[in-house]
Length: 75
Image 1 (cartoon, rainbow, N blue to C red):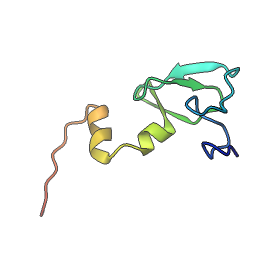
Image 2 (image 1 turned 30 degrees about the horizontal axis):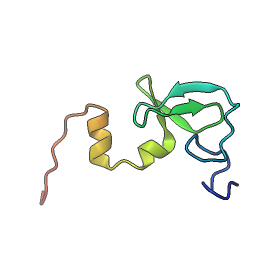
Image 3 (image 1 turned 180 degrees about the horizontal axis):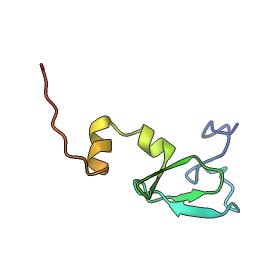
């Protein structure tokens, strides 16, 4: 486990990241590269870092996916 980012495989943003890994794609949310061995999720063909999705609120995720929604309070 990395002492800086506390992950088993360092993301590109970590100074300890292994830049010799193969670039697989680019994250739709943060626009950083997704490298071989990193956790990522493909949603309707669009790649996302797992941590980018985990950091979003439900509202942000629905907006990112283009889903029309309305929050109803006190229902």
